[in-house]
Image 1 (cartoon, rainbow over the protein chains, first blue to last red):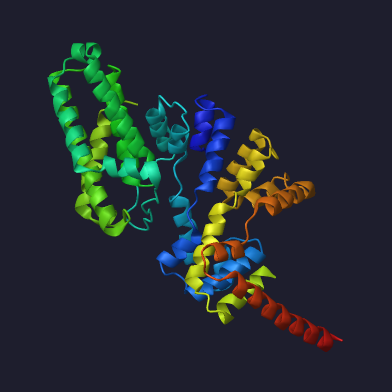
Image 2 (image 1 turned 30 degrees about the vertical axis):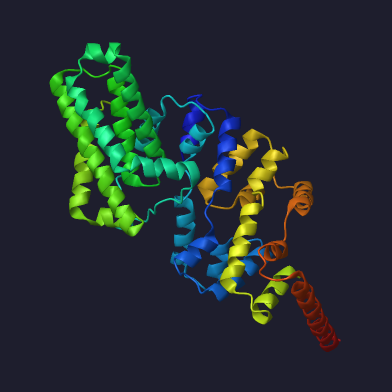
Length: 275
Length: 130
């Protein structure tokens, strides 16, 4: 199995020490299985106490003990374990927060995704919005504010008016693109959310390519890419509305129109990202 | 004793199970994780830690189980961990007192009652066994 951390090590973007520190940090931030059981009303509090005490005595995990005590079936126990896993903060986000500079993070993320690529299936989709706190939560809320969307749209709409020469010479435009890239990479980092992960990474990579003059830039290309990025933002915000309502991406995936919008944006981004 | 005594507090001293679970959760957040302890106390080197994490992720097991499976969990390591935890670990009772879920007097009285009942039970059981 290839882990994202291994790729970072292979690419010499992090040291073993930095990666271990990040993994330790991630282990400290794991969600509470007690909270999950209570919030999702999986087990009556009184029986949950029994399981918690028994698990402590027998040095085993709560999901395992709940299953052993027949308080939940194996599917529910797996559901708790999966919820814990899904709520972990992505390792890339922790490394960035630790100050590790990951210039090519977005590119690496895409390569990593491609290595185990599979589009999410509408059935059996069980990604929940991660529990985020503090600075991460602030970033998340800021990102999905209408003000931020308008700013991003304004920046994207300016793309067609920029010539290749301006892109190279104009520091303000370059900074704007870098800001956009930073925000999209950060947004990809929020992900245990499949939609945002796939789309943000690709959008970030596309912006990076524009900034690095890797695209044959002309007005037509700029207009096309502008449209692709705008429709990507629309899908991201559409997803956010679903998450706000149901707390998960499930409903998004079960909505045929949303799914179609996603696939359309995904394919459009792919078309402009030569491998 | 603490596990049985916790149950006793809930069953006999009207300690709300949800409030108790919240306290347990607080204790969990205050207790350093196993990887944190091992890293901070340099019990395993970084390369080994990484192998343990990778094995844990692959096998979907706990960090402790991964250490055991890879043969890095020794008796001396376990004993060192127990010593460190004993020094730094807060008890659930400390949290119950701190959150004023029970007063010190009531806790002591409950403990006396529990010990008395528990001693009776133990004595009866050993009598029956004899």
